[in-house]
Amino acid sequence: MLALLLAAGVGAQVPNSFETEDSLGLVQPSQVKAERVQEYASDGKWALRVLFPGSDKDTWPGISLSFDPPITDKQALQFDVYNPMDVPVALSWRIDVEGREEAIFGGATIQPHKTQAVEIWLAAAGPIKRIFPYVRMPREDRVLIFDNLRWFVLKDYFTP
Figure 1 (cartoon, rainbow, N blue to C red):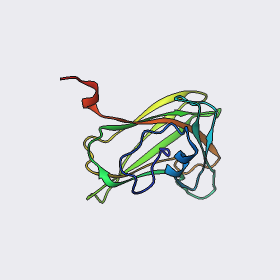
Figure 2: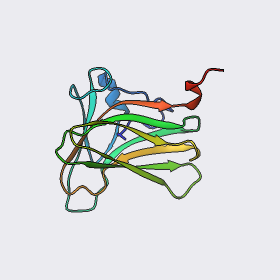
Figure 3: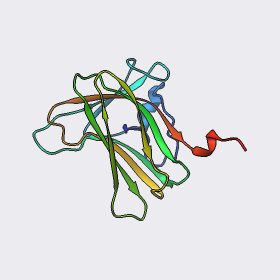
Figure 4: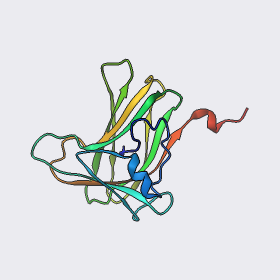
């Protein structure tokens, strides 16, 4: 998530389809290799390919979206994920909330050779400091391709 993807201090600027080289500067990789590719883009011509390396040790490789100041006005983060592998990939996420010691966790299984829209609901969580999409303890390499990161704001879908 994934990573999703913002650098600290960027604020709530998340819409990203990785159409420019500068968009890679918004990615905070953690134990992953992330690169722009022209394969499986769901919005525009470019997407973000993330390699989550397998390990015999317990690891949690992923990508961070950090928010300073914390976000409070978004209901969900949505993005598209393509799984180019022959096996399902379990994508997990951690949400760090300002003022809470315990993180909020969730996840989705991304089916092989399919693009899936993923939603991470934030509305009741509180001020969000970080969203960290990751693959939990991969024993073998896993690859996912992320694109079209966008905010979901309920009021944007209704007209007075």
